[in-house]
Length: 242
Length: 226
Image (cartoon, rainbow over all chains, first blue to last red; front, side, top):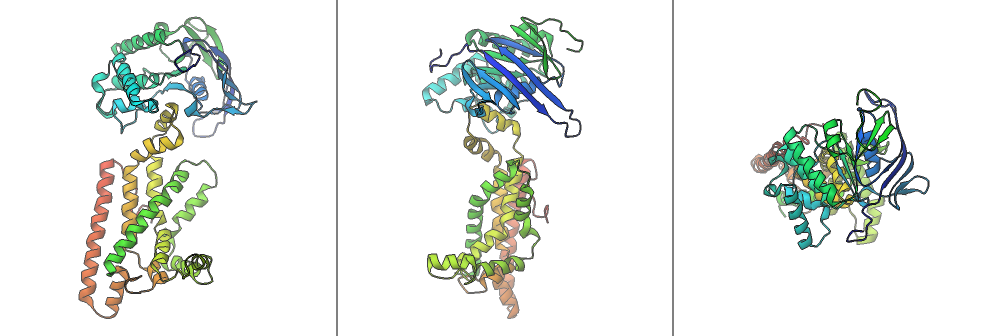
């Protein structure tokens, strides 16, 4: 249990079905239909584009509403179509780093990181911000705006901003797209350190086998909206194209 | 009160009132997924295409002794609404409505959706997201809306004439005064007041363009929807 009584090793249970129509220029009809349990540690979601990885993350975060099914963390239900439970996004306590950067452009790095812990008392809030800025080696950027930092620095600030809120589940959607190998190595190091410190389910979407091997405790292969293979660690996978 | 001061007072009141009234409507229009919202968009844009005399005519009917607004006002305050500053204010608010709603809506829509998602993911309620993310990032649109409402009210003629007439110190605004002066062949006085309105309008539009240029995008221009 953490300081406020939350069970921090609770697994994430996802059993959802979500269909999307084929409206729009290039959209194909698509059905996400999965039943998965994500234990504490890093689970790699692997699969080709359009496999439903981002859709799955959006459903877990509450940004998309599944047609049917349930999502829960331990005993707490986040979504249950049968029981008409649908906890709003801002009350789910889930961290999410998007594929493209989403730092608030009008706020400094420090203000961005403090955004998710605005309700904490000032002293405790500042301490948390200082700690996470140091942990992710971005302390010297605290007064800068997102437009004044590099892509790699922004990615680390994004990670820090998500983790400072002490989420019970962390969703990472290709967080290292476009970064060079040195920066990736630094961020992988940061994530490993965090995984050791906080024993929570982390879902990591990537196309990179090197990232998957470096980080993954478990691996889920997805294809066309369904799970095709679950493995303890990354394997070559059942189909070409992964 | 001089016609120019009356115009400035009316413009300031309209701009302030519209900022309060138009913001929630623009927010709803920007983010609602209701299929029929185009109907409300059309209603909001009506004053852009209606002749001011048409709007003024219906406003006068509504504010007259037999009109619903006039009856309500009489019951509440003991006097009529037509040919008063209050009546002028209400009619002007309707007349300048699209000049407030459209720039605000454009500004709200231009805020990147992923920032709104990020805010919610970080635990912010919709209200906090509005105050901490949408409003600060929409500041150029808000300035544009206020300035355009001010300028548009300053220059209105038809609606003012229909609803307010030309009562000195009460409803005789600068544009009405210029018209009256031209009718009585006082070109010198008309020219002075017209020049002041011209300079104010130029200054106000310069502010709009400077703000838009600084924001790096053109949120709205007076002729974009005309």
